[in-house]
Image 1 (cartoon, rainbow, N blue to C red):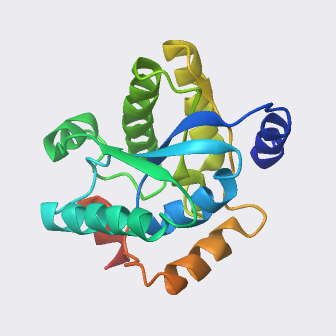
Image 2 (image 1 turned 30 degrees about the vertical axis):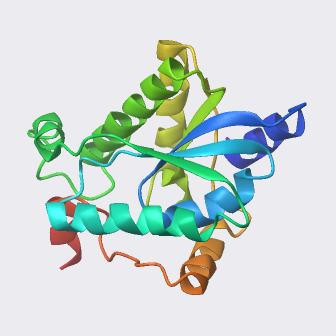
Length: 199
């Protein structure tokens, strides 16, 4: 399934700019995604990442996301909202999956936890679409992310924009933009288990 082509097809049929709630995991991943979507959508970043640990790392990434949006204000108008940080919720959700390897079932639960909150928020606030930056990473399972998105589209009656943002050099572009804007690039996904897999 070519999710990038699906996205292009949807975008090509838009007759006006639509409102999209874009879940973002971090500023670097959001960079090329914002650049790609901004001509077609009024973007609001939704920062919801209860998986990130420790709290100091969460705050660092959150502030970098805000700083990046502020740097874009003369180029793109991007709004920002955030949800409460609740690492205990994440830990409860994955309590039986702590020994899973990075990229497996534990990550799938994490994707859905964050995307579910995004879809619910988008539905309640009257957005036209929701999606996530997660597919920009070559380490994330784009097929699973899009599968979750379609399920949540039905659950909340809010359109999901399919994506594989790493395609068409999306991931490489995020690296270029991170360098251009001097963005903090973390060296682990977010949870303490992903950190253990790296170090």
